[in-house]
Length: 183
Image 1 (cartoon, helix red, strand yellow):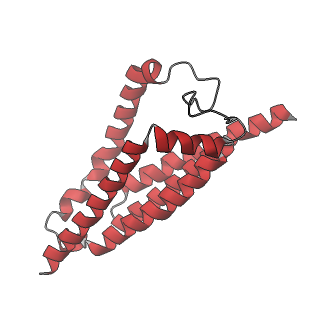
Image 2: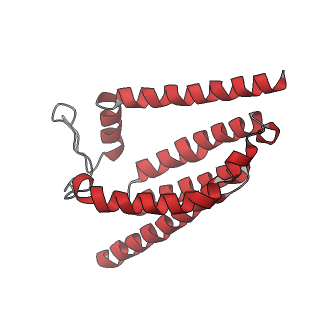
Image 3: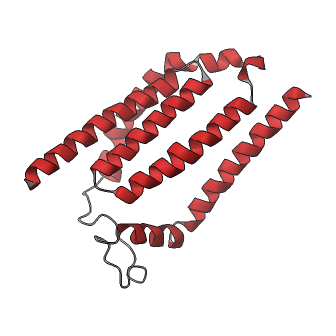
């Protein structure tokens, strides 16, 4: 029975992975900015499905809340605020679909060929490895959400805050672009 559940989990991971790749390809190949955002939403939901099939419930729900919820709303807000139809450079955005698929495939092949063993070395036996002082009194296998939060807000707090500042700068930049366009 356990072997059957493991096989179903692997198959669901593969199905969600292929669907995420299809959503990402649709996002890149779409000529409409709104359709690109919808492709991004589909890809992020499929990535959440991948996490859920790997029994990483916290990461799956965080993926849905943060990316499928927050980032997609931010992207839609920016797309609706900045009207690309009024820009003279609109034709530049339309050229991406011709070369993007080939560039992504070549980049992925080069990445896998060059960095596979360097980055994706032997897998860890544990899902998350914390420093001993952070893991004090915590069973990482049973308390996954607590372990991720301790790691995120201790060792990775600065990158987390930098990401929030980058998103804020993107939103302010979109408002500035939209404001100068309407004047």
